[in-house]
Image (cartoon, rainbow, N blue to C red; front, side, top):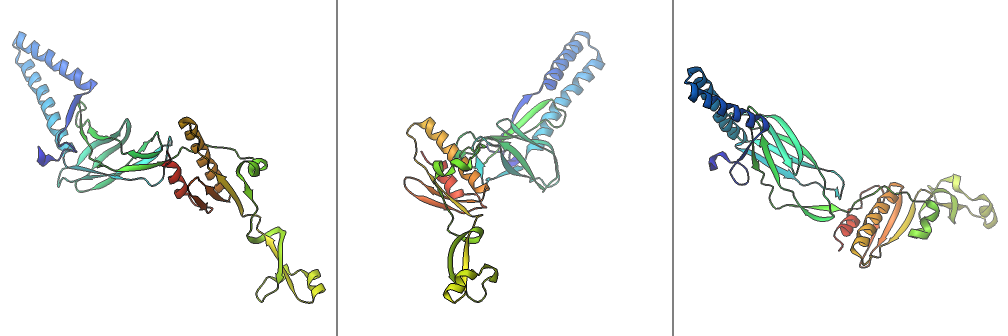
Length: 299
């Protein structure tokens, strides 16, 4: 059977469907009737029904043969959040197409109706990883009920020994600006910008915006002075991560910390994350993978 290349074990499993069980019972009934009556028409019907059963097994075996399935590791996966697992399915057969193929990952399915020879198609399965940290790629099978639906035949997919890094669970939280400084340690921005608050005064240089000249000060000291304004849009926040000792409390704390971090970044804050053994400076408008990785692997 090795020449058929039937999945990870090079072997296919078979189980009759409800329709298949009904057909088998009906076939046995026709067979007993043919033996008891000696009716040639019943013998012919019984022979045809057995032929259908045999043909179903052979065709479904060919249908599953030489199907190569490769797994593309997802980049950003969060615990308890559906993640798209993408599979590349290729029919290695030269002339024969495959039909009605289904990838099943622990009950989550993706269906391919037709796979021509020497063609690769992509299938996506929405899968839920339950815990943060490194997770094994779940076991997967490729099955078909082709051609008659009498039997479900499946093979195990060889996905290798890959692992997926799962970030902590993220929840929707509401952060009140009034409590931000008390809870997280808000720091006023030190960036120059075009806000309303005066940051400092300096000597005017060629190329500076003349609209920002501070005329009263310039008149007093006899040279042009330029106003530097605070950047109202750029805000910085410090998140201090002090891990709890209880495992259940630690999980809730990590979930809340990750959720808070992403919420602040969505609000255009610059976040400094301080952990017991290191610190991270997180820029706005990008996913803080370094911090999320740290939280995912913290135990």
